[in-house]
Image (cartoon, rainbow, N blue to C red; front, side, top):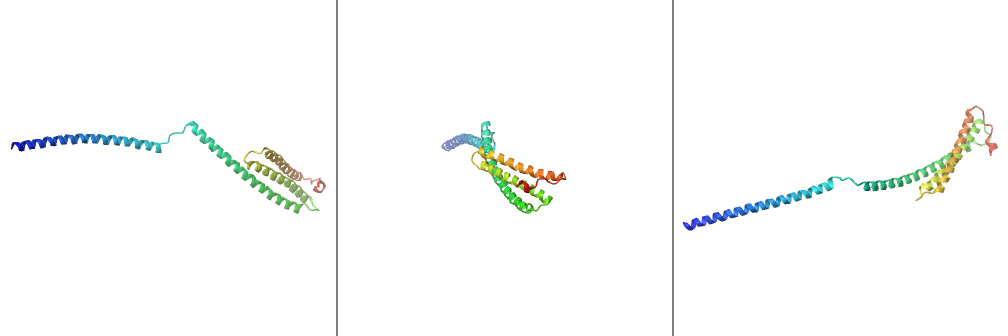
Length: 191
């Protein structure tokens, strides 16, 4: 009996020690798991903030981005201006052809008052088309180049004045016709 009791007591104390050790280890394990979960939570939060929360750029970064975009817009605008100048030059060439066709039809002698007026207007508009074509080609020469061409811009200005003078001459011819008096100076005397 006594050895059976001692054996039971030894088993009971050993079991108690094991249970206490297990509980202590369980507490250590629980603490370790909690620390790991907290650390992982911080990592997840940091990753989430890094990828989902946008931090505001510094003023220097904003200025650099704006400057880069402004340069891109300037280059794009220059290309577009180049294309439009070439297109307008083409339109001027087509307009010249149309006006030459009109001159061929309205200017042969003999001309009455209406034909004389049409011939004057068509001749003046031909000058406007030529000036406009020259101006647009000069602007295209500057806008399509890698750098500004001051001579081309100056020649575009002069050619623009020629174009404007042709339009003024055509307007003057039409204005005189509106006054009721026929033109006194015929195109045959000018040529």
